[in-house]
Length: 368
Image 1 (tube, one colour):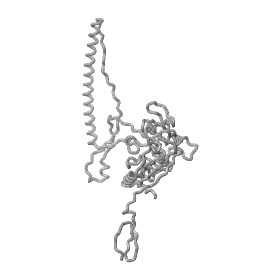
Image 2 (tube, rainbow, N blue to C red):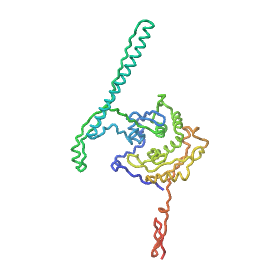
Image 3 (cartoon, rainbow, N blue to C red):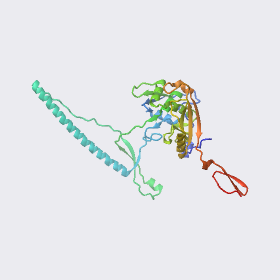
């Protein structure tokens, strides 16, 4: 049984596909070995340098953006209508007025508190020493330097009956700026992706967020196991399918552990969902037939295949005692499962006039 051919998303993108699955020089020993930097934040690794993130994304599709679905889109200025721009300016004016009122109220409260504190200190000084001391408490607010966000404003067009050429000619785009806070988007690597780049490709160095120190391979392995108790079998499965040329992403949308793509989710839909089954490890929960049937139905409803990945643990190795050297001892096998339905697979012989016809449906007829 073979997997179904993945459905392409956009036909034009297939011409731009490059067969680069890893961000390392393959077949060129003279090329410098890249070294990316990441920050461990507890459940993932963040790549702050956008140049490194671009290389990881374009050469292997590693990582996911914090807000965008694929690649950061906040660098491009948004395009809005003129009425939307007028409404935004009204909102900004209302916000500035409210902030000015709040600042005045805060300054009045601060001045009242300062007067009371100064009066009490002066009275105490007069009683004890007969001298008065004056304290200057000036409330100053530092100007907030907010970056300007660029916006492209086009004319309003509510007439749907106009031609495309007339609509494009009447847009008249203009570039405006508004003082809003710009959120810098970063690329986030999953624990499996980060450890694959760190361990298998040796092109990633990771720094801890709290200690601000570079992490060793053993230290990062232990932190990944503490963060996710199922990290060992997930990484073994991730390494197995990545080495076969698949792009492995999270399968949470399909109720599975992973989803594999042909050349990436930018060009094709997911080929199948992957569910991990642990073997030779009594501490791991077992999958029942009811659960397997549920996974099959969920993936088939999304027009995807279902792959059961069996991970055989080495003898006398558990999650707590597993180290990096034991990764090579794991055995991985995958099986493609499909539900058998009688109406689609059962064949009946339908006789008519001495001829026998094999059909895919059930026919009930009398034989002449």
